Image 1: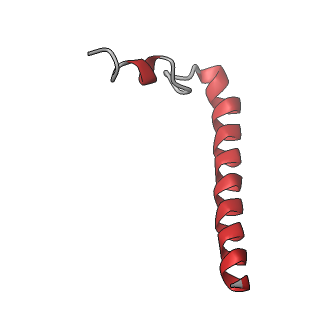
Image 2 (image 1 turned 90 degrees about the horizontal axis):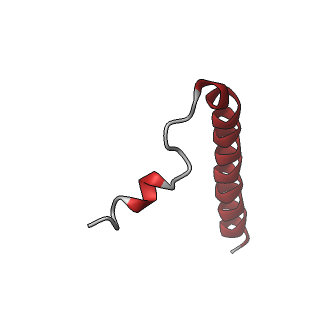
Length: 50
């Protein structure tokens, strides 16, 4: 019963406080965007080399 409840409780985003939202939230978004662009760019590079 509690298996579905566990991830949200110990997850990365419980409910960020205003102080952490301005710093950690933006940093997280930027890192996520960079990672996504890197993955897309890497896949695109691989496909162009095939």
